[in-house]
Image (cartoon, one colour):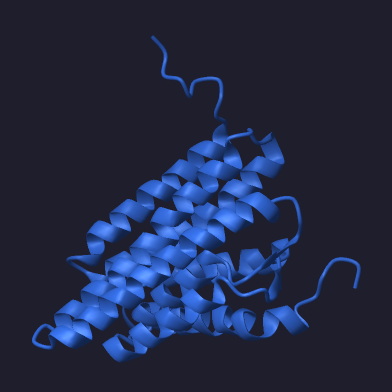
Length: 226
C-alpha cells in the first residue's frame, strides 16, 4: 500500500517538509548549543525561500500553502522561541520570576506566529505583500542576534516580545524581490558555514539587512509598479 502523499505532493512540498525537519532539529539543538540552533533556523529560512523558487519552476500542489505554514510554525515559531527560552533559563536559573516572565514571552511569540501564519494562509498567499512581520524574518533576526554574539537574556526577551507584537500588526510588508532574496540567502549561508570571526561578521551583516527591512521595508522598499 502506497503512502497517501504519493502522487499528491510535489518537489516543492518535499523542500517544505524538509524545512519542518530543520525546525525540529533546531529546537533539539537549542537545548545543547545555541549557536547550532541559530544556524539550523537560518538554514530552515533558506529552505523556506527555496520551496517558493521550486514551486514557481515546477509547479505547486493544493497542499503547498498549508504545509508551508505548518512547517513555519516549527522552524520560525517554536524553534526560535525555544532558543530564547533555553538562554533565559540558563542565565536566570536562580531567578524564578525572571525565568517565568521570559518563558511567558516566548510562549506569546509562538502564539503570535501561529496566528500570523493562519492569517497569511487565509488572506495573503496570492498577493505580493503581507500584513505584519513575516515569521521567517522574525526568526532570522533572533538567530542572527545569537550568532552575532548578543546573547544577553534581557535583550533576547525584549526582542522576542517586540517581534511577537509586530507579527500581528497591520503594517504592510512587500515581498522581497528575487535579487534581494538571493543576496540575503548568500549572506545567511555564509553566516551558517563560516567559522570564527568571519562567520560572526556575516551574522552582523545579516542582522543589519534583516533589521533594515524590518524597520524600513514598509515605507521605503520598492514595490512592483512603482
